[in-house]
Amino acid sequence: MKNYLIVIDMQTDFVDGSLGTKEAVAIVPAVKKRIEEARAAGEVVIFTRDTHETEYLTTQEGRNLPVEHCIRGTRGWQIVPELKGLAEGAEIFDKPTFGSRALGEALAAANEREPIGKITLVGLCTDICVISNAMLIKAFLPEVPIAVKAEACAGVTPESHERALISMQTCQIKVE
Image (tube, rainbow, N blue to C red; front, side, top):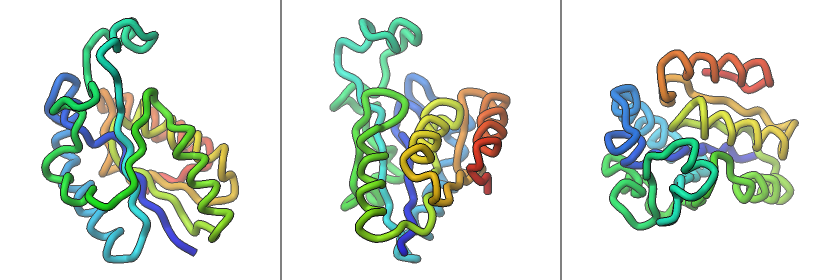
């Protein structure tokens, strides 16, 4: 059985760019450490990237959050420099919305080939994309243990981060 680490949206715009926060900046070392631990333990490391096109502001998300971010090919779309080298060679899922159906499908297929022992998520934002992907993965793989490393996640606000952790616990996702 292999374990998986899913690194959610550790992109410049979410850390210190257009939607960055001091909490997001603060988790970068913890995310880096967790990726290094995963690699040393032989875990499969996968990244996601929030990916929008130039017409972002005309989308439903853009109308509800009218801040251009993670536009494909821009600096803000890139994985943060501190993690960029750790992303090399990893599979990266570009996702146009909060959760990635393609990620869920890929994990389900991987589980068919070789049972997955555990999936851990880290990254941004706890209350949007981390919770969306955790719930989506839980729907695809209800019998695989799923965890979120709280100290390696940050939400839009500290309060919404805590609420998201509680919601995930309620849905049998372990908070570590």
